[in-house]
Image 1 (cartoon, rainbow, N blue to C red):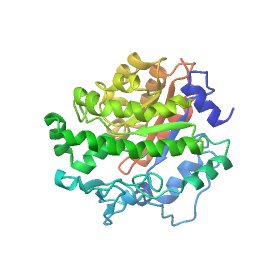
Image 2 (cartoon, rainbow, N blue to C red):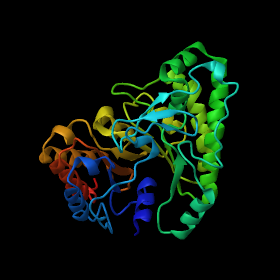
Image 3 (cartoon, rainbow, N blue to C red):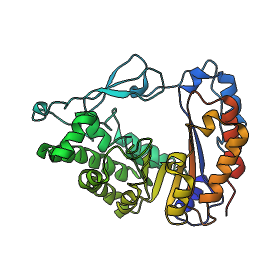
Image 4 (cartoon, helix red, strand yellow):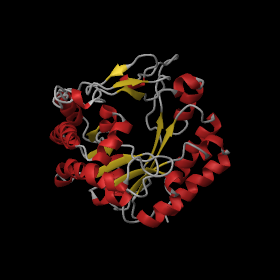
Length: 348
């Protein structure tokens, strides 16, 4: 069974051979740790990094346009991003529609030419997908496609007042953003994407960034319309959100999400298991705040074992991902890789 087939079986509750595990190394890590040690870690975990070949030293990773220190970046919507560390996605510090007076003359970007954060050649995307039929091809919207895009355009505080005040121009702004997003979705469908992704952080450390009522009124209907073409084409729908989204999770599932990527400890392992085990595929985002940062390798092993034993079932419905960022001790990164490989074959 290929990794693609195994992933789709996990998503569809069709008894995968193992739990799909992903370990993502943030580019900032290559400046924060000895590169030789990073390469050794990746080479020594072939289940997580099959066919890995180390680059030549010194290695300089590519940094996304929104993640370059001291290089403010203006995206396709006109939002200005700044960051203090290469590899770490920045913050929008320039909001092109902070003043509603600028809305009438505003020209949105063209989804035929760009993704919202940079140019794209859709014909090349189609050729790349056709050239690798054994790979799993995920298409989808940029991170922060709807709610966060509105925040980036207006500013968070302005947007909260817009929602509370029922600002009539907000509906036109939502429509504009949605039309752009729909163009991206239709392009990926035309190119042959097999999973459609909708990444958008909605949660804070405790609770969501907007009220459930405002989410249902302003954001959920747009989500449903954006997910409909992919659902009608038979594609699994993957939704990512950082933070505490417990009060929004049912709305996301009801809105069409098949695979929910949410953080483990901020939402609660028991809560996730009780609510979704055996019913909805969970793409579990492994803790980066406490256990993996400050715990011991034994603590980390216990965490991964608890998560797979609490949420995983032999029918499927569980994938896991960890994002490695600077600040995590190297020995803990190794412990995570060890545990993910050790328990990827564990089922209830």
